[in-house]
Amino acid sequence: MSNELNITPNTKVSLNFSITLETGEVVDTNFDRAPVSFVMGDGSLLPGFEACLLGLKPGDEAAFTISPEDGFGEPQEANFQDIPRHTFSNDAELAIGMVFSFADAAGGELPGVVDAFDEDTVRVNFNHPLAGRTLRFEVKIDRVEPAELH
Image 1: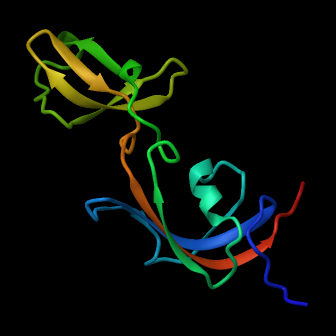
Image 2 (image 1 turned 60 degrees about the vertical axis):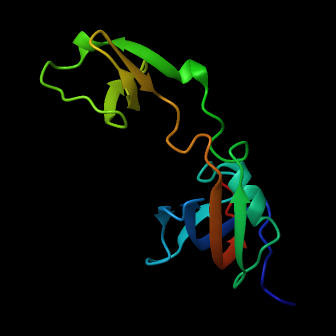
């Protein structure tokens, strides 16, 4: 009997991964470090990424194209907000693409990217930075174990 499990919803997976943009720009990778471990379905990975892993086993290497719908979604118009220019400090040099941190309703921090601005208003994009992007997801499976159910 082989002890090699395939990845299923109730498994703990250790893997190396990289996420790159279509341009080849690396968003995140751990191929230069030890594998990371997580339990399928624990929220560590978006469902679209998890779905790619099902059925893989230790030693497998694979690459997937993740569409925006399966990744970080499409940018939503509702996530663009116009904020009065005077709420930014007077000496803040604004530039398109700058990231600012804003307080959200729960008191946490929410990053927003300057999309456009004029003397009165700053249009801020609160969409995830990878929204609307097609991503390349590469994995090398290190270990697959039964998840410990608590």
